[in-house]
Each structure stands twice: as C-alpha cells, then as structure tokens.
Length: 237
Image (cartoon, rainbow, N blue to C red; front, side, top):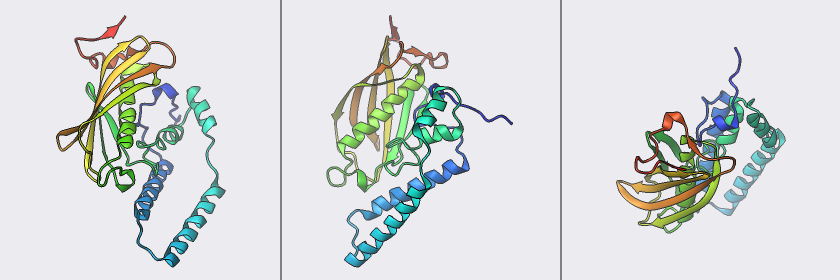
C-alpha cells in the first residue's frame, strides 16, 4: 500500500492527518510537560524537595538530548516538494505555539471550519495569567492571530500577518472555556481582510480586525468555499 504524501499547500492551519502512534505519544508527552508547568507555579515544596525535583528534571532532559531531533529543514524540503509524510505534517503542525497538540506551550487552542466561520475553543490555565485570575491580553492577541490566519484555509495562497488591531472589551477568565470566531471580510489582490472575536459564556470579551498579505500571488477563494465571503463584498478587482 502506497503511503499518502503531502505538499505544504495541502496543510490546513492547526489540522493534521490521522496521527500515527508516534505522533499520539508525542502529544501525550507534550500534555504531561504542560501539566508539569502548571504544577511548578508557586509550588509549595521544601528546599530539599526542590533540589530533588531539579535533579529529576535534569536527568530527563539529558536523556531527551541523547535522542536528538528530526531535521526541521529536511521536513520543510519534503513538504515543499510534495513528498511529505503524515509524520512530517504532524511534526510541523503539532508543535505550533498555542495550537500544537504536542507543544507544552499549548492549551491547546482547537480550531476548525464551520461554514463561513472559523471557530476555536481553549481553556487557559494559570501559566497564561495576566491580571489575577484573567488571561493575559498578549496571549489572547496571539490566539486571535492563529485563529484569523486560519481564514486562509478558504483561499488559494498563504501569507503573513500584516496588521492586527485588537480591542479589549472585558476580562477573559482563566480555567474557563473560551470561544473564538473569525470570518473573511474581503479579498483585495494580495490582501486578505478578516475579523475575529473572543467570547466567554456568550459575552464578547475581545474584538479584532486584521490584514494578511499573500507571500506569492493574489488571494482567490477555493471553489468549495465560494460562499465564505459576505455577499455584499466579494473579491475586489
């Protein structure tokens, strides 16, 4: 049976093929490391215990260093050539900050397409705190950047954040499910305009507007997402 291969342009933001056993174990390891980070915060342990924990972590780190890491540049080269494996895709996507399911720095933020909307959900633990009991505004800005970038799944071409304007309307609590929503506003040659928002229990806490700039060529809707733009806007000539 021939293994499925992937091109970089086939990868949707925060989405991977069905993970291999290896990828699933990577996700479990990342989840455990994220849990350790939460436990370390204001850990109420004696000096002797702290020294013991440091020694244990150092031992684990040394063991991990002996394993080495898959070459990132080679992974990218295979994906750009259309010869990437499923593990290449998960190695690229699963370690993204905030959305990566194997990243210790990720809640994770889940993102998906729902008709003409991009939706997301995350529960932010104490490591993401800004004001007491609240998610740091910079973390929400990063989450919105990831969310709104996914509107590019509707179009051909992919680009980078040009501008991101954010308005904070209310505090966003920790350890509470947070909902995200984004939509396309317009396509103007190499500019993609979109809007995003953050919600907690039906109350909007953040609004955002952004422009993404295509790295190569003009943006164009994929045929299967022809209705993703508002009917009163469309694609500018």
